[in-house]
Image (cartoon, rainbow, N blue to C red):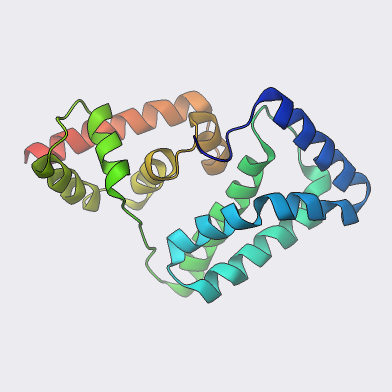
Amino acid sequence: MNSNHKTDKDIQLELQQVNAAKEDPRRFNVLYENYFKSIYIFVYRRTGNEEQAADITSLVFLKALMNIKKYEFKGVPFSGWLFRIAFNEVSMHFRKNNAHRIVSIEQSGIIQIAQEAEITDNTEAVQLMTNALKKLDTEDIQLIELRFFEKHSFAEVGEIVGITENNAKVRVYRIIDKLKKLMKL
């Protein structure tokens, strides 16, 4: 389970922490401590550069602190809001620098995608899936990466990329269908 998956009790405690930070920005440090590592890893996986990841992560938390009063609870953990800020900052970084984004592909994630696509788990299938993933566009890869490599729930994926949970499910399963077709070519 992803460390960002929360029980209802966890979400309520987190909401109390958010409300405390809204009242007194000095209380934001609890949220910072809770999420710094996961946001840094999220950014680093996309940049592949420690210095860039640190700079972007700092910017994410600065923006979060400056906009905490605008945060509205939407039924998903606060981390979804932070990951959305991070997602946007990484995208902006690559647009501004006209650079290409890094995609971290792990075999366990590929095996999970293959299982979702009802493809037998063998070495050849993993290689075919890896090659098919390389043919996807950036938007599709981002959804697959969030869902299968970073293990976010569909609700979190939707929150991060700014779509509904159902839309996230539909789009991910359409991408899986696309991968199945690409594997047969």
